[in-house]
Length: 479
Image (cartoon, rainbow, N blue to C red; front, side, top):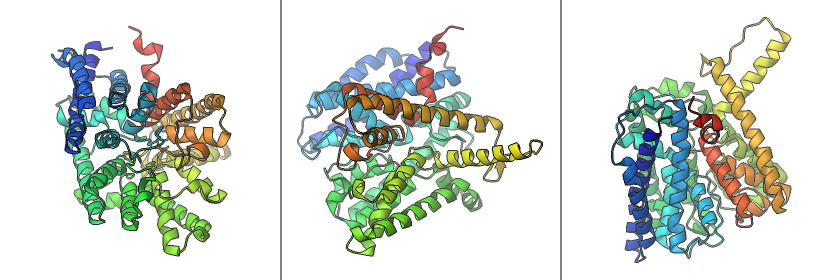
């Protein structure tokens, strides 16, 4: 293990977080609030990071193990220090609650312990939503975009952080790949802010809601979330952009370079859009009697499908009151999630496609043992290693769901609350059902459960391996 290199990277990460906190500090000043909570945190971050990042180590080799450890360690550090402004400002006095809220922000989960939001300082709410935007694309991707790094070594960092079963470079140089990803991310965010302004949404609200939408996080600055604006145009725009940010960002690069044939060939994109269309139609038909017009029913169904399948977690209605059929569809969408290489969570559509195709291949092999069958995605044969990794991921995923749900049951909540809370955190969605539904929150859980759910959010965002490797004793053995 290259400890000096890891220390240097962690120092850089803390400096980046300190720099990011200057934005909410400025927002606090604009609204006549005290920036002291952010300034104190910035001072702590700088004081701790300078000894680590002052001198670049001579040996900057990053192998797979270091990449996973760096990714998991960076996200934990971001969350631990990112929680301090909430505590120093008094917005969330308890540090464990603040950690839960911050982890939920950076992992773009959107689960909250806050019961009242609108009375909090604007600077604090800006930081809360800004964590979504930072965490959506990934802090290590941001670091690769602004700092030079060896191409082969940087790939280990990108592989550990970018969600999904495939992590292909879109251009040969890793730094160029990171720059392109963040360029697309920023442009889409700015377009969204502009469109929300056209709907007469206030500038501050447009910015923070765009941050939460781009990161597919779901933190809102209103107690009633997006439903508080009573703005159908904004609902359509946010609903569409939640799906936009749930699509693999490689697709947008292919569109920019006019490789339209590759876009149409993308199997994951087709399946994702078909699922969204069918789910919207089914829920509309099932809930149409709940609304005064068909248009309202279609818009609401589309928004809720978009917010759940993209794992954003905004709300315009309390879907916990819908019929069981619609709630069951929502539950399946929670598990599925969106596309690999997007800012969304969940299993990822490509991973589900691979698992289903591998299942049918196993059936064929059982019937015809001597037949040669390969699993293809986008017309290309997948290596056995990819199938093996997908199977391992699914095993860990369902094992963690069972374990976390079991431990949450100690708090005495009903099964629907515990299971949906687990799914909401592991899949980085935000709302669940019952106590943690769209009109509820996670404040009633014990401190132990909040820490467990915080771990689940980090594990889901990093797709398990970085955290498992970080806490594995074998990782720290010398040989």
